Amino acid sequence: MATKCLNFPRNITIIYPNFRCRRKGSSLQIHCPSLLSRLKNFIPSDGLCLVALTMLDLYEAAPDLFLAGLASGMERVALFSFARYDPCLEFSPELWWEVKTNKSSIPDDLRRRLVLGRSCKLLVHETGHLLGLPHCVYYSCCMNGSGHLAEDFAQSAFLCPVCLRKLAMIAGTPGLDARGRYEALGRIFRDFGMEEEEGWIRRRIEAGGADGDSN
Ligand SMILES: [Zn+2]
Ligand SMILES: [Zn+2]
Image 1: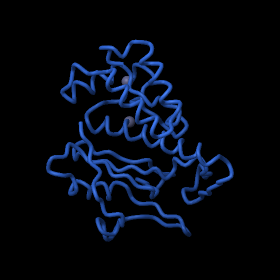
Image 2: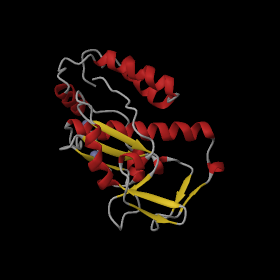
Image 3: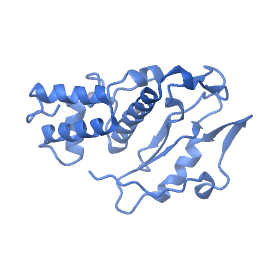
Image 4: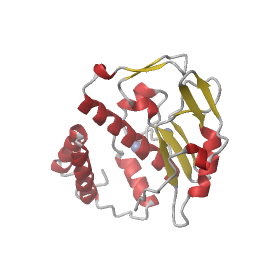
């Protein structure tokens, strides 16, 4: 399946002039459901679904500390924020506006890789939902449900054999070229400098299970 990066307006006020938000001092959170409902207008005529990404912080209801994002399968749109994925962030478990960045807490390269890895996992998981995949209860899998950030971060970056077969059926490619897929994924992880994920792929291919096997 091809993906296309749209020239989406960077300024939220263009797509949502009177956007709903909450502010405290210099902190700002965008009301995710109301912005999500506007996004369906931006789905291209040949698009299966649309995923919008932001570094702005999101919330859904007043008691929320924050929201990683929301998907509306019926509308084929999703909105996600990477704002809380920065490992240098220190935030209060009670007050949404109490967020500090401690840049000395982690080397820049590791910080970049962690944000990238966490963001990639979120995108795979939520795009899987938009395409019709439910939460996985079979194996350690990128489609496992998670209740908080620690669970989210500990989750696998990869689809298990069950979810991979489901995805292949949804995509109309039941005879999945598993080895070709893993080799392509390996190149992406290498380009991104994601050594741990690339190593997992290499071991998977070396184990030989990628020949005609869906995992
Ligand atoms: Zn989910
Ligand atoms: Zn699974």
